[in-house]
Image (cartoon, rainbow, N blue to C red):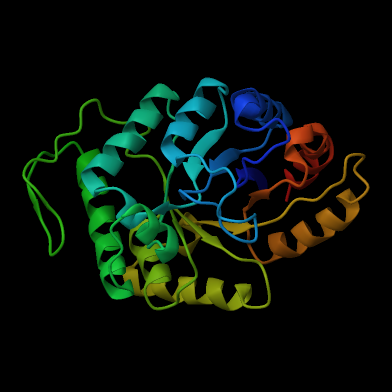
Length: 290
């Protein structure tokens, strides 16, 4: 099993003037801890349960570029990009840019988007649910076409691109891994089976069923279920002295038995750095052999 660190909060004691310094320290400590990946949310306002909407929130891909400059090994992604927040040609270009400048460490985390409040608030495009899923599939097709090296036009129901030129190409070949977030059984997990290299689900009583539904979609799509990386959202609260490491390992062990390969989530007290050190010293080596 691998560990991923997620940064959904940017409201730290030093406030915005210290935020660049705080994020640089967190990025460095995350890398030193030996975790596999580092992610941010793709929101423009804060969301519950992380705080009120007025709390600090940074734009995702600008932040990932900053984190890329302060790391050299961890994979970088959003958990997850809202499909309607950027046109797909631009999104593919942004992820490609991140991949090139990070020396091949970008992933495309993507989902159908859900936050109507922030979208309406800042005037972002937010169509009905069915259309968002249609746009999600077209976006996946466009990104894959752009990463394939082809330059043909793309003519979909929602997006029309005259020439899918992408230069430079991503360093990761054949393309940056695609992670689709969400647990919808009819649409989301079908798209995972058809297009993605990873899924992102929630732990809990329904997780075994969600994995079984994904397996069924893989069978219908002619896809090897084992080729898809299973990741779950997890909240790490190990304590500054590691007092909750044992409990955390017990929970992660249950997930590993279900076939979960990556536990990826927020670290309680991350700005204090010490919890990241505990994760690196005690969690990462313990789960590496699972």
